[in-house]
Length: 165
Image (cartoon, rainbow, N blue to C red; front, side, top):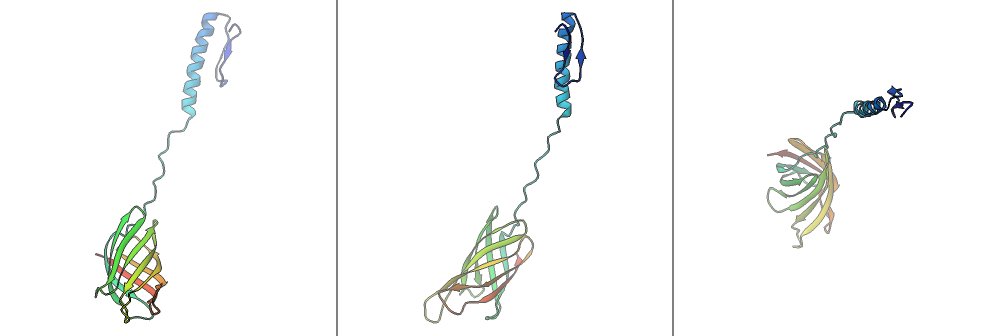
């Protein structure tokens, strides 16, 4: 290093014909490179929070209305693990029951309701309906086109109006 040393970043220049001073320039230059790299780096940023799914777990009561049946008092019991929802529902009289499966995102529910209801022939009417609507509050209004299954006279144009208990 007889003619001197220029740092890799071009920030310092040491010119010396003396070996001892060149060694000193090398040390000072290396420290400046390290400190300069640290000064130019950005501080670490915290990761963005992950949005949580709407919570619909709990006991709900309300009505199931359809265009071809009188509105019925119903109850739902829902469990939730992260965004996955499972549960049961039933008419207050206990004659018609079903299961609920679905998912929530930050503001909505999308799922499937099954139905199991007695019929006049003695064979149980069973079917399912796709249901969706807003989620994550003390009240929910979920809708669906209607149940389809092994009987002809299932409720159609469904509206579930429920209150969290």
